[in-house]
Image (cartoon, rainbow, N blue to C red; front, side):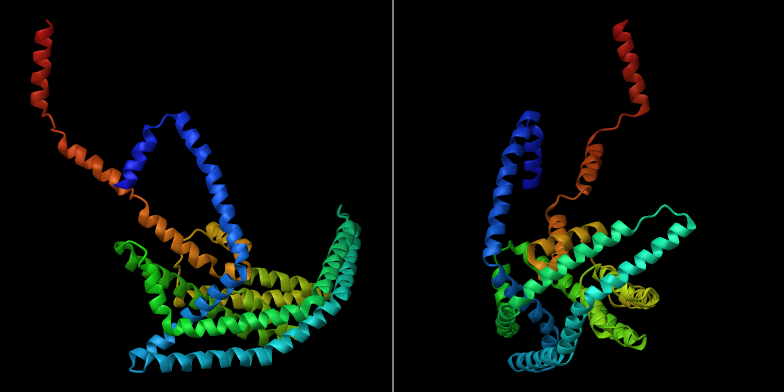
Length: 386
């Protein structure tokens, strides 16, 4: 009803009044957006910790709820599940992370050699193109790539000087995230209910269900796909004797957590390997594409299917917006947040069927005139005129 009144008010305005209303509304939206961005930047670290802890607690709440439904006490089960998850994270951090970090350092050290190798391959390709008669000049492209990549390497080396400060800050953030995850795992339901109570009563249950299903379907599916991707690519790359196979397989698996991230990771890793050996890069590309297609076309539909209901363009826009607003964590939570926003808009938007029902109601109210009566009326009108 309120939406109908607002629509009637908007239609009653003159075109000039509509332009003035939009002109007054646009600066207010810009100011509000600037204020929200300033507040977000000020509390950025706190928001990242809170969102990360909320996501972890949300994922861990499912085994806790399952064990609780089978007769276990929530407090004890929450402690057990939290310690088990923390042990898994620490085990991965102790085993895989040092190896991946070592390979990353070796890769950074070998990047200048890889760049020179890629440049020489471009020069060979240029000579072959000139021999065939193709009007292609790759000398300028090779020099530009060489200069830009070396500039990026210098910036990376400069940032590496602050590695100790970054490491200490990351450890503190990790500890705070784990502590907050533990408390949310025990009292997250009460906190969520207190937040949902601010909504109108008729929106509380649908909103909670939409948020739960959106985040549940997205995160569980992406975690399964990411784990399967990394688990399949790491031994495949090691079997193919790909240099830095552990690092490359782990990188593609982590990037698979993000929509379109797996494809970007495959393209990036293929490009890096092709700088040293083109044939090895082709084998890496074929192996990664086979694994990706198997996961996305066979395993993913069985796990989930299509749940977002979003156009791929909107998914890409939401991912880019999340990257701009919240960095890596914003990219991870962008798609489920977009699904929730879409559901809210569909809920508050007046349904299109209302116009059809109103037209049908008007047709039912209108009294149809029979053909006999209409002919009599026309005859009477003609007699009156004559």
